[in-house]
Every structure is written in structure tokens, then in C-alpha cells.
Image (tube, rainbow, N blue to C red):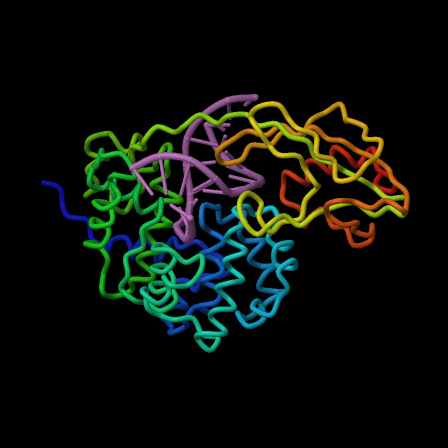
Length: 354
DNA sequence: GAGTCGTGGAC
DNA sequence: TGTCCAAGACT
């Protein structure tokens, strides 16, 4: 009979191997009584949703430098926040980030609530993020279940039921292990373990603090767990992006609606993106020139190939959609990646963008 | 439960 | 190149 996994063994490992992150108060500082800033924990957890630590770090540092408190963020303009989020993806997170910051200020006196149920009522905070904030920022005995925890628990108990059906069992397994003491460090420890040792491919079982109690390690099934339901193939969609430059150098851009794909982000006016034939939809009447090369981009559920049409217009141009952004105010870094790809291909055809 | 919603890195 | 994947939320 294998021994039972103990939270204490994982915490001992975490005390030595905890990774350094800008928002994290490590085990040593935590033991000395230092508390994490709930604002920074919340911001980091939202950014980390389906996103790697490496990608998040730079965005986190820029956000906190620009908006040091939740009140600062709540007072920001929508476009400023969306522009700062550009490139990080899943833009509903940024829209909900602002809604949440404003709700914390308006309804909670500028202080984040500490209990799971109240956190869950805030925009962009789901079961995982509510538990993470409660556990990490307030040391509440909540069970955090993210992709790492699912993988670690599936292996620890050699659970072959595919996700998402296995989720309740994996949650129960993790809850049974959550200690009354240091639940915040425990949550971070499981996630660090999943990110560095109990990895999706080629797990480093030989140096795992839970190698002795791990059922999948004993069965040799660790690399194939957790099982997942088969994914749907991605279709290819086609569309046209319109890049118009005015004689003063200004570029025609439009703010997308606050919902759906790239909602709230700045971008080039586009036709619809469809699997069938593309219908022309230029934002103004002009002599459009089609570039030789298409922009290619893959979203979560489809591949996109964008034809790029470019034109030069005079100062009398009156676009039906979007507005001209002065050359000095145009910042490619505020565009989502697919729109930045279009710009990179179109810029050789533009004046003053050599 | 299944679909929508980004991106960059690893292999 | 293509595929999978990452500290999920929302509909």
C-alpha cells in the first residue's frame, strides 16, 4: 500500500523551490508576517487565466506601474486599459477587469472582499479566481482548482476519466488535501509543482516531492494523464482588412464593439470573417490596392487568412466607419496581435512608416 | 455540456 | 509547418 500524500511534504518542497514572481509574497516573507496585496493578487490571477507566467510578468509590471491601486485602475479610461492589455489576449478579461475594479470601488469601498462567495459576484472572477484570491491574499482555506491541480490530482490518484467529466472527482481529491494551515502557500505550491515538475509532457517524477504516494507514477501512466475529450478541428475563415492612410499620415482605425471576438479593441476596419466567400466592405470609397501577401493568424477555434487592401486618400475623405488617428498618436502596440500583423505587412506600402 | 474567446512558446 | 498547451470565465 502506497503512503498517503501529505500537504506538509509539498509545503516543505515549496519552502525551498517557490518561484519568484512580482506579485508573490514567498514563503519566507509570508512566514515573517508579510501579506500580499489583494489588488496585485487579483490582477495577476486574471492575467494568468489561460496565460503563462512569462507572458504575464511584463504586463503585470506595466499595469501596476501605471495603476498602483484598484482605485487608480477604476478611474482609468476604457481605451487606455484595452491598449495596455493589447497582445495578452482574451480581451473580455480586460473589459471585466475594469468592471470589477469599478465595482470594488463603488460597492466595496475600494477594498477587495475576502470571502469566496462575494468574490464570485464580481465580473471576471469565477470559481478558480475567487478561490485563489481568498486563499493567497487572505489565507482562507479554499481549494484552488486550475489546470495544474487537475493534472496533479489525476496523476496522484491515477484517474482516467476524461476532463471535464473528471472535474468533480479532481476537486474533491484536492479539497481533501488542502491543509487548514497555509492554504495560500499550499495552493501556490500545487500550481508550482504542476508548472515545473508535474508537467503535461515528460514529467520529472524522479524529483517530485509526491513521487512516493503517486499512483500514476507507480502505474507508469503519468505522462498520459489527465485524459481529455477530443477537440474539434479548426475551420479556415477568410476576410479583408482595410488600411487607409490620409495625406497627413493619419490612419483609419475603428474601435470594435464591446462584445465578441477582440471586443473593445482598436483595429483596422474589416469585412466579415467567414468560411465561405468574402463580401467586400470597404469603410470608404477609394482606389484600393490588394497586397500580395495575406495575414495569417490562428484563434482558439478557427484559422484566419486576411487579405489586406491599402489605399491613400486626401483630407476630404469621409469614412463610413472608424476614424482617422493622427500619425503621432498611432501606437501599433495598442493593437491586438492579428491587427499588428496586418500593419506589419501593410507598412511598406504606407508613407512615413519605412 | 459545449461553444466562444488570444497568444506565444514548446516540440 | 501543425498541434498542443497555459494559474478560466461566460453564455
